[in-house]
Amino acid sequence: MRNTSILSVAVLAALALPAAALAQTAQTKATVDSAKAAGIVGEQADGFLGLVTSAADPAVKATVADINAGRAQLYAQAAAKNGVTPVAAGAAAFESVVRGKLRPGDYYRPAGGGWVRK
Image (tube, rainbow, N blue to C red):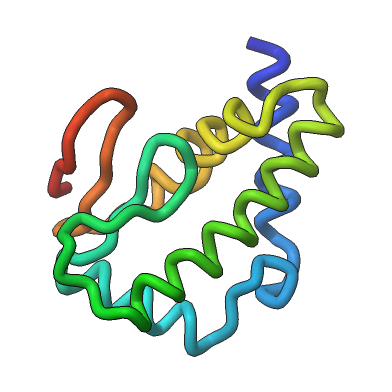
C-alpha cells in the first residue's frame, strides 16, 4: 500500500507539469475533449487514452497518439523514481488521477473489460 501511495504522489506531481511537458497543447486538449464528448475517445485503466470506436478521424488518432506518448514518458519517469514498472505507474495514474476526473457520459475501459459509459 505504501508503494502505491508514493507512486500516486509521484504521478500526481508529474501530471502537474506544464502542458508542454505532457505533449499536450490547448489544441490537442480541445480535440480530445471534443472526441470524448462524442464518445469516440475514452480513458483506459492502463492510464492511456483509447479509441472507443473506429470512427475516429486521422487527426483524433494522431492527437491520441501524441498525448499517449507524453503520458508514457511521465509514467516511465514516475516508475524509475519509485522502483516500479511503467505499467504500474500508468495504472496508478488512472486510479489516483483520471478515474476521479471522469464526467457523466465519459467512456472508460477498466482492466480486462470493455468500454463503459459513466
